[in-house]
Length: 133
Image (cartoon, rainbow, N blue to C red; front, side, top):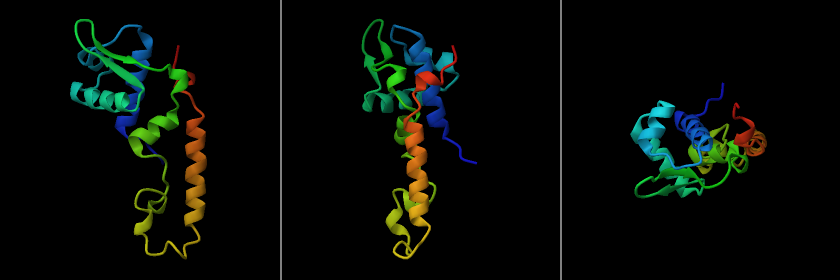
């Protein structure tokens, strides 16, 4: 079974909530509406802002709002942002060079190809298509 981290799942919930409104939402409001602790919401929103998905507005009436529409944000982008992409084996991810068998392993190419294909499929799924109306 492949599972996404809570952070990725929470990011989707936060983005769906932001898409429901046209005005910025405060962290406290996002926390209340999503049931996610404020500190976690704040951390996720910081990553979303850094990636250009959302923006923060300071001052009265400020908060977090989407910078781009849900239709332009793919599930793959969130998996890449919060999970570091899809890697079915250690040799497919950041620690690829740690494997002592990398030069002779016949499976490495298979797992890299599978990981790349799944990432491509996730990249083709816009969040808007997942949102319940």
